[in-house]
Image (cartoon, rainbow, N blue to C red; front, top):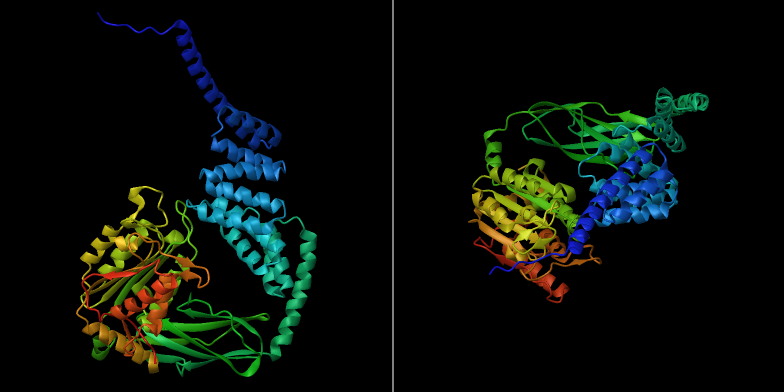
Length: 578
């Protein structure tokens, strides 16, 4: 006969009450959360705190309630309690940008300005959606924090960024900028800021009017005093204000004559600003104070070049030089047919789902700088891509590799350098979230290498478990690059994979040398220390032998680089300038 199981009436009643109680708790949680939000919106912060606390009694894992209670407590000046709530949301990776912003504001309100800036910077990194409202508030508070720390440069930088994001405090910020510029004796900028603050409705209109009168007098006195002083630019190359060239880059050379202290020089090509020249040590002199040299990219036809010198007394302008770029001759086309180098350089130090590294980003910058130098081939901007931290997502890395390597022709060299975390069979991009789909698999990189037409291929990885995976130049610079590209043309090619460690090893960083150990010796080797046969060319084999020996010795054999693949051991990677 079948057997029947019976549940007692008492048990059924208990289960029914338990389910009902759970449902009621969930309803209370939602009810008090909504009630708290309404109170917060109405600026009834005491009631908001009470409602959020009640909501958390019913659901202690409601991160939204912790976040909003932290905000309410900040308004109630309970800054330490606010930080405690915000730490809970940060621990669970909940709305990191907003939580770090309010944590920074809490430290700011407690006069801990350096700590505040730390969390404002974390909020910026966490704001992956680029929420303009959050960015605006971050830049505003960072500006005020730096102002409290008497760092006027950083104050101005962040205030300007806040204005660029559309700050609602534009009148107040312009007023603060006017004060800073006045103290720095930048009277014209101070006047512009005051006029803007008045236009935007700043309440201190009478005071602003008085300051404008004072500034007008100071600017007039300054101009009169500077009538006897001057800043002049003398073009050395080109020797006249019009020149015709057949190279796509031009070696600009300008002598700066100045009776004033020059803070910065800007170079404009076709009205587009190049990287400014800062950190000048220009002693006022009637002689040539400093010679400015720049490699200028040219477009077909006429290119207008002008310079601006910024002093405390104002801005001075050069004459306009016109460089006409014509179609290259046959001989120049023959030079253009020489091998080219294409590179993608990646460095990831900051992660959300992995421990932060110290120097991976710096390692990438140094590799990039080497490849841009004559010793590394003087790669132009269209031949190299640098991806660091938030720019080094999986899609950006693979897209950059595909784009650069597909541009390579048969005689070229392609280089992929990666510094960051590595897991078995993969590298870890910035947007890795712990899932398999967000890893950059060794196979993905291998497929791109395989499909590339270039006969010379080099892959350098400084990561844990990495083992599982011609210009118009003069003098010794030209000789260095000519020798490098001639050696590259002669190589029989192949694919070389240089890994910082064995598959089971960890790649080490060191605070003494402030780099990853492997990358530190990699750069030193490329700069000439690996040129064992003294032929002024650093080959793959020479570079690896040097890096392997030095890395092993420095780490006491805890890290052992590996090199494998089918390749010409004489494949050149760098040249040594005599």
